[in-house]
Structure formats: C-alpha cells, structure tokens
Length: 80
Image (tube, rainbow, N blue to C red; front, side, top):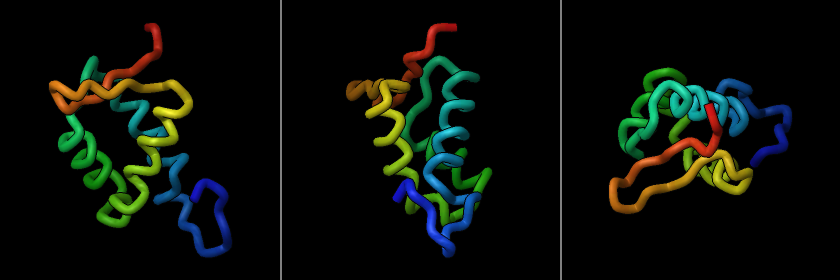
C-alpha cells in the first residue's frame, strides 16, 4: 500500500495521510481516534478513510506516535 502505482492518487496516499496526522498531533498534545479520523476526512475527503488505518500503523511502526487505550487517543512521540 505504501508503494504507489499509476492508479494511486497522491492525495489519498499513506504518506500524505501520515503527514496530515503528524501535523495534527504536533498542534495538539493528544487527539482522539474519532476526531483524528474526522479531521482527515474533512481535509482530504471520504476516500481517505480506506488508508487511514494503514497510515496509523505506518506511524506507529516508525515510533512516531503512541496509542492510549484508556482514552482512545494518540500522542506524538516527538519532543518539542
């Protein structure tokens, strides 16, 4: 899913969605899953919902975010 092909719209790519998620996490200390998904859909459109979980997994595997199960939210690992 990360490697684009000729049919991939760059607007809905995992890397673009990941960049939007990181910018949202840098603006706020903690963001809940539902509000983060809504922000991505508002910014990019309904088609971004397909790659949203993949973008979260990508950022988690890179160590860029943590998931807080008690609050169902994400926090950035970046030191400001």
